[in-house]
Amino acid sequence: MTYPHPHFKTVELKHASRLINHGPTVLVTTAHAGRRNIMAAAWSMPVEFTPPRIAIVIDKNTYSRELIAASGVFAVCIPGASAADLTYAVGIATGREGDKFQHFGIEAVPGAVTGAPLPTAGCVAWMECRLIPERHTEDAYDTCFAEVVAAAADERVFANGHWDFREDNAELHTLHHVGAGNFVVSSTMTKAKPLPGAPLISC
Ligand SMILES: Cc1cc2nc3c(=O)[nH]c(=O)nc-3n(C[C@H](O)[C@H](O)[C@H](O)COP(=O)(O)O)c2cc1C
Image (cartoon, rainbow, N blue to C red; front, side, top):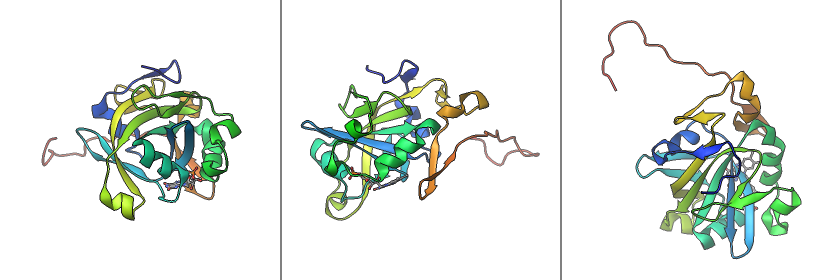
């Protein structure tokens, strides 16, 4: 399997949902017949456990949607804090005006399963996805459903199926868009402790 970075390790598909469970802003990448594209998306979420499926809002008027409809695949790449400027830049420009990879100097390798471009720098995880054809999506809606068919993450910040945001890996923390180019960066983790008393149910 091809990894965009030596620290990237395979994420088991049963853990793929955890990559976006906390709502990071992501980069959606696509390629079809010699054309490729990248855009920002703040709205995505897991919707099924097995096989892992996600929902992601990709405006039907975007160039990305055109390429996804044509190829049936895309990648969801999760930028780290150091890629905030790039994330915003690809979210306010359209690939219809030119190749954003070339324009912004984004190096990428094709994903082993889907061929969707995976940036070799700036991202801390990615999921390769196959679009689930839905009539409602084709007709009217911006929400797309997809099955995750491969995933990998930077082991310095996501290992054993869990994010591990620490002070010493701050540049690898994820971005969360709060509007107008402002992002919150994930930071302090807090571990829930059991409340006093016996649990009502155990799970
Ligand atoms: C931080 C950020 C988050 C965004 N989130 C979404 C989103 O969730 N869904 C969406 O359709 N567009 C979103 N956009 C807008 C697209 O990225 C934008 O329309 C982009 O220019 C589309 O590019 P394309 O035409 O090359 O596909 C976002 C933009 C930014 C800057």
